[in-house]
Image 1 (cartoon, rainbow, N blue to C red):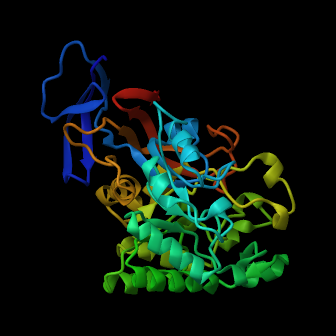
Image 2: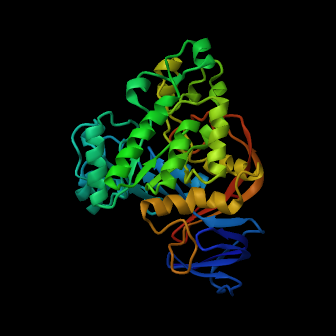
Image 3: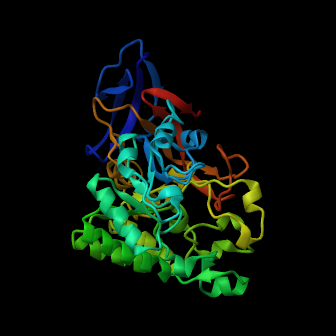
Length: 411
């Protein structure tokens, strides 16, 4: 295999504390050397011109392992939700899912918490862990039965697997497509109170505490939910949470004139809750920023708002949208890379999200100041349905490297 060297880079790696100018040499899929190093004459070189070189992004909880979109977004590993067809509730299905993106994208599947994600009969988490599952997930839905959820948490804890859950109390949120308030009332949309999220978090945090389990709330979006997570962390509960750029940057006002691309799950919240989500990133309550990549085709989105499928394409825009937090002074660049690379890798227990000699050479090179405009018709991957269509952004992926091999190189 030809050696690859990235030279004149600004290397940022929060996992090892590296923040310096230098070079990175990749040989035989691994990182061979970092820093002020000599480059073998036979190595292929990429001149970074002072741009940022960081660990490849790790996207936690995608519904589609969309290799083209991930390459465009600097993502080298994804944790795949079990909401597939068929559902990932069998060891053979988990093993097959792992192979789907290689060699350009490594897929780490979550096992379905229950058979068919129906929220009733437990799936065989232990056997699926042996097949490669990195956690147990409830999918797009909450498990209504506290008895079933307690068994999920207890069973997963026995195998040292995190439980990834959706946080909306279905007794309040079923059939709702918006957050209760002035916007939903004005548009005549079926809505649920924002407290449906906090109710789900409160129950599942208490159960996780009771059974000593690790629990991760994939997408939180309300002040009340973050307050519960903060309090649980102070008590020593093994709880983590994630957010998406959509809930950081958009409020329910983005629904506008029934814009179905803004039909998400959880639904967009009030401006107060949006600002609370930013505060939760700022103070460290949020552990992970993930794309929420759940692309929907045109047929699923070009419907009346209440009938449209929730979800958005987010892999391509994860980095540029998240960089808004750095420019606004919410987090440092180092902390942002932690949130979108090192932390998700650590949560699922894979050797990604860091740059150290001997590690898999998964890298992203990007220009944090490069301007461009999001265009849903030009987005790579399965679908371009994004509520950020037309938004000017800064931050462009220049190269995505997986295992020392160039997956994507932009001029």
